[in-house]
Amino acid sequence: MRRVYEPRDLLEAEMLVGMLASEGIDAYLAGVHLLGAMGDLPAMGLLGLLVEDARAEQAQWLISEYNAAAPLPGDEEPGACPGMLLC
Image 1: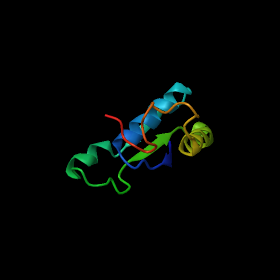
Image 2: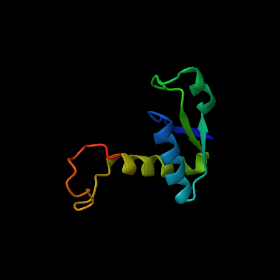
Image 3: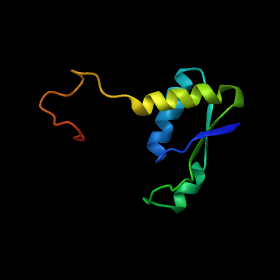
């Protein structure tokens, strides 16, 4: 197994695990059990996304494409401001 990415938080980590799974890549999230002691503080490198060595390059490429993606024009909610969290 190889560490391919360090997510900012648990939400990003779970989204990436799901995205990789949809592409047929099994991913393991290391350090998730250490977050309980941190509370709401940033994870500071505790989380790590691991995949099989043979799929590491593909996983890194998919993650970089995910991070570089921008919303498609017209996908915004009507009347919402860009960058605004919708509840």
